[in-house]
Length: 147
Image (cartoon, rainbow, N blue to C red; front, side, top):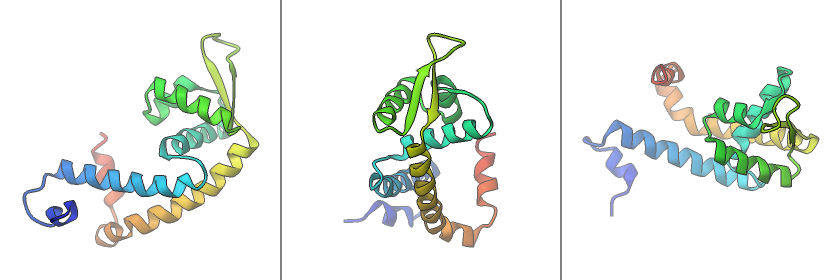
């Protein structure tokens, strides 16, 4: 039985399919590593975005984090509630808009984020090492797809 990797090595597989397969494999491996710290990729992404907003002294709302990460509002809300239950974040009503929730990263959230960021950086270096050896400008080329 041939695997997707075997098929990808042959001509005829679409770039989109291959890109999706690689992204799914990356996310799956990343989630396995993050699960040891009771996080998944989306939780990490939102926690990291929250820390970025905190460092820039901007009060973050769930809507801002949703927009910043590209995670839909409903999923962001569910993840924020979950992370609040884990004591990784603190949520409260916005002083400017009673419908909005401002979010702050907790001390525990900062510790978990620092630890998992190191894990992710090591993982990504290993995961993408093969392609970086072949093409040092791969990030620039991939960024072109976003424009």
